[in-house]
Image (cartoon, rainbow, N blue to C red; front, side, top):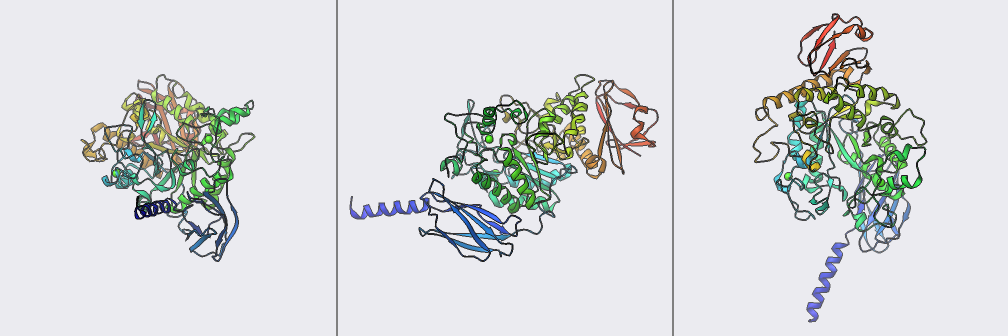
Length: 617
Ligand SMILES: [Ca+2]
Ligand SMILES: [Ca+2]
């Protein structure tokens, strides 16, 4: 080799190395005017970084610099004075490296037109963005990503749906009565296809996070997310982001180059979680069972974060605050809540509420028992550890509503009656998210045996029971399927969301008569609920189900709503005298769905398999 060629190769190697040594900092930027004055920067450089640093900016004080055993990382603890002005400053490292850090001004609109919180007068629509609508075919394939596939013929790979597709259909959702969109995680999932069971699958669902500060390019990146959130807010709608605190994808930078050895929950050999939430409240639980529940991995390609490590905790807490302030989202749904370190959960909830008093957070605590669900939120129980979360995804109510909907026996509403009777355990059951199905469950219309009358019962219960109702995309147009052979079957594309679709169910003319009836029934009840103080925020009174009929009231001092579920396959007659406690002096009622007037005499006729919703007058 000639000297010239040798030098060229050395130069090239140097250039490549220099490029590989780009200094990354997390959070990528921050704000002045925040409640918390402390900020911990994680600086990452794959070619080492020195711990000697200098910052010269009025109102910024370096409190501490710590370097873990991995010399590619340095943690800088800053204090930002309340007088600090927005701007940017240089962080100079003693090895000559430097980076510029930006401080923006915290938005004055938080709690007003952004970060508004989501309450029980809202109606949430859950979307898997890859499967809803493709607003930008140019971003379907990412050539610089580890997974470059976009193939609608394969149920386990990406299909090309994106945030622009959601934005394009906000008016459709608003027309349905939806106030809030919750999407499965939108952040970057730069994972290769992974083996799950016999198949290779992609991170199309979003739960394999590889970068907490970047929205996935196949969803349209940070720009498209800003646009969607702003467009929703401009229409008076809200956005819930899906967070995953428990784990990251195995190609996350803190897994590829771990900052310290206890960043992840590590085991001598692969250790899966035991998935037993009982270990937290069981007075007889062993320490090892609890350690495995919290520290065991969800699946082998989702490394479990050690959230008891203060650096890890800060990394996740600051990211969640960052995303809330950056995009202005209105609430968080937290995935795999019960797999996380308990004290961490309370700390992150407090930190979020301190910065954003209106923010809403509900955790996914998948359990069918009310005491267990209540354990993971603010409750009225005497437990050793007290959780501080506002609400949970209410699986006990879900199971009972499905029982009542299936109406396999005249007593099928009994479970719902009993489940609601246990609401005394919750501090505020109205903050629970209630639902008929979601992306991890059999689709509701299939669970209802594709019987339209049962479909209407389920939607009717969803929109009249206490809590924040959530509908899974496509339920309103009778999308169906069971999770057989895999959950991809309940994550099919919304018909009309993708070019070339044979039907467009976003428009009334593309829907069948029955699909339109399903859409309009949902719209009718959702519209009524929005203006009904009793349904959206009122008290509940329920009566023991008798003879296949379950009666409950939602009421406040302005309005009384009487809901009557006839679970029988036959028309029934209900004697009203038993309900005089709530009917009081009301003489008439309006059927909320049909608009018909109903005379509240001594008896009332009930059609077979129907939830009758009456506004008393
Ligand atoms: Ca696309
Ligand atoms: Ca865990």
